[in-house]
Length: 218
Ligand SMILES: N[C@@H](CCC(=O)N[C@@H](CS)C(=O)NCC(=O)O)C(=O)O
Image (cartoon, rainbow, N blue to C red; front, top):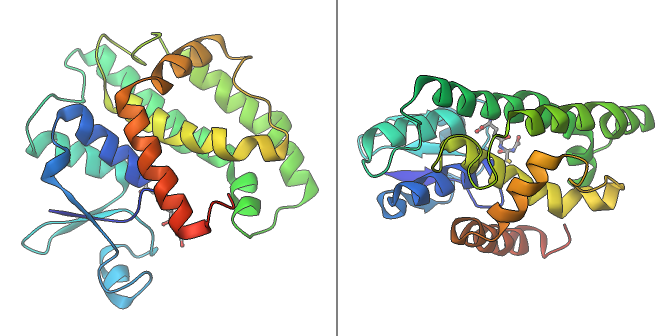
């Protein structure tokens, strides 16, 4: 199986982290986008021309990082990243939704500006003063442990959080966004998560990929 994309993307990293948690990192080969970025072949697998997408040996493809994590969790074996307890599983899923809906929506203007786009002063102010603090408060509320976001082992929620917070730490200071100190559950969790081998390996991959694409200007 090929995973098309690069570690510069938190969505690619979500999948690679989840595979590491499963002890199955070797089951998927990370490759460049087949046919080239935004090529007709790329668009045939992902109509928005985004990364990542998964390409099976029989040509079947699947886009959307979370759908890919869930598919791989079901087929590659190893430790499950979906909690067995229904409530814990739902809470892990809630964290992922908070990240993918509220957090990702909130950082939109900063992301645009950081990667060469534009945002109005009003959009930036709303993101920094309202939307991002609201999303982080919600995330803080959802995190239940200092070592695992929910339950008593790694889950796909941890993979989603770690991959997004890598970019939070890397980009937000340049926009004057304060750190995570105001969010007690989240900051205690994040301080521990950062020290783990799983996060350090992800950070090393992402750092290398950022250097390749942006020459460390981000
Ligand atoms: N919801 C998607 C998000 C994917 C996404 O936004 N990918 C970005 C890279 S981080 C991308 O490919 N952007 C290129 C573009 O939009 O042209 C997922 O979870 O896979």
